[in-house]
Image (tube, rainbow, N blue to C red; front, side, top):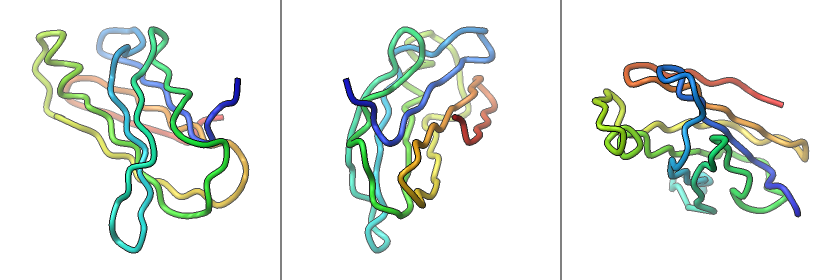
Length: 112
C-alpha cells in the first residue's frame, strides 16, 4: 500500500480522542485558483492517508477540513465551520500536517 505525499490526522483535544469521519480535501494553488486533487475522510484513528499521489510538484497546497459537519454530528456548537491549512511543498519528503481541534480553537504544526 502506498502512502500519499501529504497525510493528516485530527485530534479532538476538547473530547480527548481522534476525530473520526471528518471530510478532508487536498487542493493545489494553480496561478491563484485552487484545484482539488483528492478527497478523503479521517478513519477511526483520526487519520487520512489517501490524500492524492505519492509525489506532488513543489507549490502551495491546502487542506480543507469540514469541522462544522463533524461537530454538528456530535451536536456540539463550534466557531469554525471549516478549517483551511495552507502550506508549501518544496521537495520529495513526506508532509504530515496534523490538526489539533476543539470547538473554539485549533492549532497545527509540521508533523513527521
